[in-house]
View (cartoon, rainbow, N blue to C red):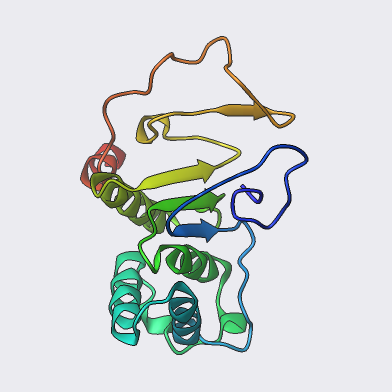
Length: 179
């Protein structure tokens, strides 16, 4: 993933990409002295968004992930879960065609975990691509495809299904199943 975003050079070969790319690294890369709002402004500028586009997108992401009350809070004062929300929101800010997520839901509570999957479902419906790297997959039915890596090489486990499951649970169905 780090090669795809240009953070690491490949040992061999090359990577080419076109269009906007959103990246949510496993460890958030934020400036401790800046507030959440200031991060949105900084990233919006880097993405080439107008101030109005950036504010609208930030407002929508605050609401979708439920952390509006932290808009004026410096990131040094955020809990790990709220920092993870900001990290994801910064990757989503410009609505990139491709979203790369490295352990994106680590630190989320269950409600935020469900909100995360709602956002991913919306992206799928909008024709966007999402690549998620995770050390565990608890909801395999939420994925179109699962690839297992071993020593940097894709492998297909002997007991793995040949195609992705068709049904994807919605937030409402997941909550209903928990009752």
